[in-house]
Length: 155
Length: 115
Picture 1 (cartoon, rainbow over the protein chains, first blue to last red):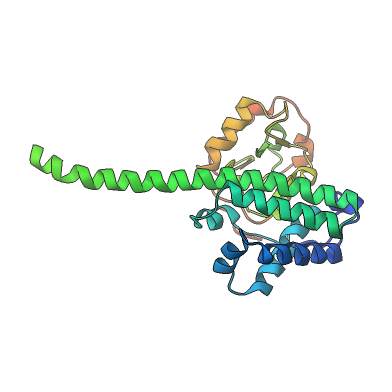
Picture 2: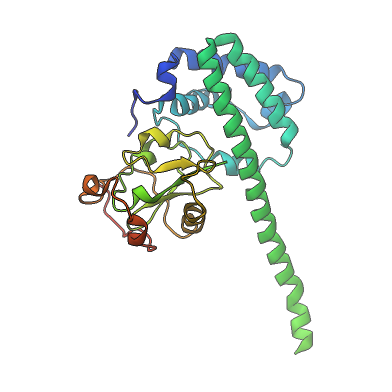
């Protein structure tokens, strides 16, 4: 069940609404797709743009209007992309700040940018943790496989 | 950076937070919820939604080491909760009461039939 409006949502007093989120998402992903550094990463991983843009509108509606429209697991999804690192997140944030400053009034832009910065940092920490955990599992399996013949010899 | 659930969730467990969390990072114990620190994306949407004001940034003095460790430990042990459910009986009576840490139950949530 999702709600469409919550007076306590941070975006309400900043004037955020669905139309503004739509303009921001269009502006931002337009910049992303034209960007020589992160554009190719998106091109390689997003086959169909409209569902992705729709998901991102739901995401930003959930973040700023507490609408509950987006439900997802962004950390495992991004962890599975071996090519992305801090430099990609940094460029992502630069483009997001430019897009927000262009299409949102100052108070709303500040809100979007603050949340984008926090989410970006958490995603990076979460991805590092997720990749470490995945690697530790692989190492443990590999170590177990290495150990087996030796144990047989010892016996 | 992450958010943590603290003492005032105990014996209330309103679960309003679950409905707005975009990444489903809440885990359910018998009498409180916790946030998985490696899944939370630090968006803060759950904070104003909590009727018990039990959720704080890990940078807040209310997020003491006790609560950071309870959130980290039990989010690995308890089941993921992704839908809002009725609060615990007399949640409003327990909301804001002090000394609830002593009433913390480390067991996972009991299986319930979805409403």
